[in-house]
Image (cartoon, rainbow, N blue to C red; front, side, top):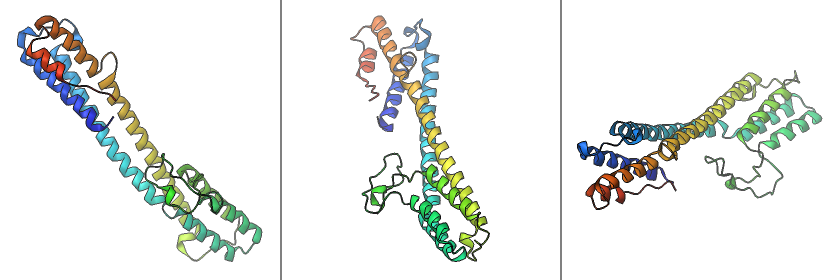
Length: 241
């Protein structure tokens, strides 16, 4: 269901609170869940959880975009590292080991047709010329760490170019880990906010949909189906899907 749909449900619930408040002393249920104070408290909760979802959604977008920026061209950097080591270390076996790692940043064998991964919303892997089966962010962090560890085994690796020096690469690894973890945390936070929204709106015992059903039954009992209040409440639609 779209965010607009959830907001519409809350707006309709607010209409129910307005209708019941307008009935004055006539509206006097014994069921605590649908007393005016309880309905207003639930309305405030419902609005708060919608706001929280919007906030967490925005935070997730920012964190995911920042992660994408940090990981951009990581494969090219790995390739440059390998090229620097080919000259400084000048060892065919070592270069072969580096090549094994650097290929992982691009994934698979040349010629494999990649497919877009629906779990990485900020990356369209189908536009890549390489398979991306291994190109998850966690994997790329691990591959980069492996690359640095391998370089540290060779004292002769001491390039003049700042971007491929080991301290620079270690700082890059820390940045990759930080942005990846921040994105994962933001995604988890959004998930928690969505769960809280669904509980407030759709819990089978205490959600707004359930409360409206109780209100409608109460109004029907005290005023009848032909009453304006009942007709107004009955005309409101609440949909989860």
